[in-house]
Length: 306
Image (cartoon, rainbow, N blue to C red):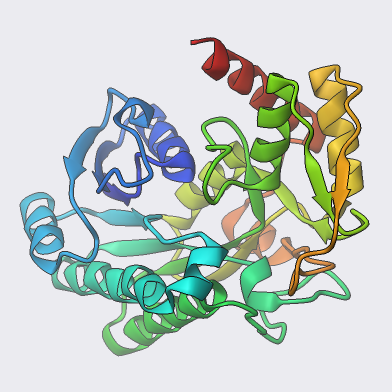
């Protein structure tokens, strides 16, 4: 296949690129490098510097390549920025996705869209299925959900094999411990520096932590599916306290966390039911939490020593 990966110089996108290159696909990365890094891009892929909001740049690339598929991972992913600048969040996540959809429509390109589980479903009393009530608590979740709805509308209106993947809390190598980083990158980054990680609230809030290598496999699987919405997670909830215990174990650290007041609006329980993805995509998360954290810790140490 000829595949365009938007955001392919970033944390998740670069792992998707690696997986596609390993399959022998012709991979082109579209990234404005505002968050991503050239060093993340496999030498087996071609980097095109550009912004998904730039209709001319997107059209030119699709016209040149006429790609079979597009893994659309470029996004504004910081919840705090989405609250402070909802217009910017919408411009990137909704308008940017429309630019990709229009180019894909003109050239018969199938799209796999990186969406979000926790930010769309809100509080979960049980593992959230794809048909669960959707209760975004921040503009970020609303923009991802709006993009999903555009994708489904385009499928109905024009046909095409478009897939939306609702990811759990992704962690793994190449995740920046700064900015919009996930808690794993923050914890391990601080432990590597001898710092004191902070836990907000009592630490009993839970998430579905899924390794980035598994997410890359799910994304590649989505490229061959005729369309739909699928959760990508482990189906297991892990508390922040449990997560920190495993982080300390892999880092061989005895540093105790510092507890801070709970953050306003933070979800207490968020985890996904991945059964549909297993049935339809043949995907099941394979990397257990400790194995994934050990791989991430090895990368953090190597990155800090380089």
